[in-house]
Length: 250
Image (cartoon, rainbow, N blue to C red; front, side, top):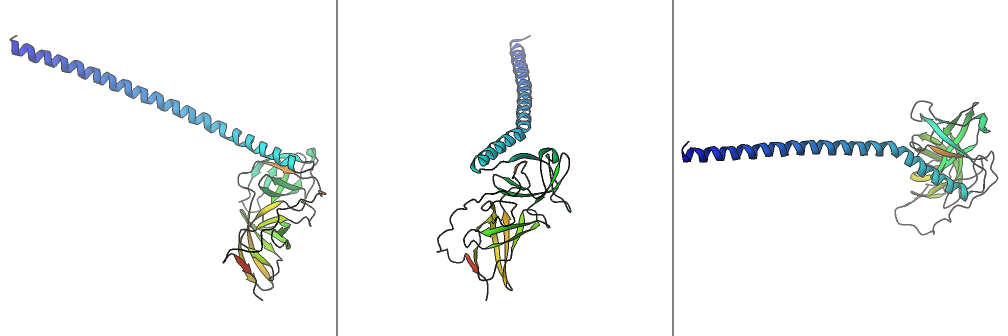
């Protein structure tokens, strides 16, 4: 071959070598990306598998803290079925007569009141949550200490009945158990007022429940007719921000 031909041939060989190296490098890079993707997927799967256990451990820790705050003998139960959103649905506990449960025992979680035991079987019990349409609980307002009855309105909501139109109720005001129904001690958090409207001789008060009923899994069952009165936080000062106070019409 002539010198020019040899030069072209040499450049062609160099180009082929470079191309082969680039292809090899690209394939290695693709393989590395696939390996990294597999590792990320494995880490995510492990995290997802551990998440329920971590959440339950955290919930159990908070339950233990609640136990230490209340001088009562509790039973810890697990909610094994939650069909509150179904017609006539409710919750099922993994304790029954074998755990000494009785109807009307109060059930709570760290965030607040969950409901009460409704029916007890040999190894399981049904739980009537606060937001069930046939649920009623004696409650009181944080500011005035006016008492009424909380009635369920469906998922996460309830209405406060028998609050006279002369009472002053604020949106955001806490609602506590009154203890008058003897299922719960006085002073357990139930929820917060979300709306107030005058209606005839009483106020129409809606309440958002504080307990996360959609995701709660571990609960404490109170003893029957607990003999305990808790002191709710002191009511706030009388002065309130303009526009937040609602009073029934005379």
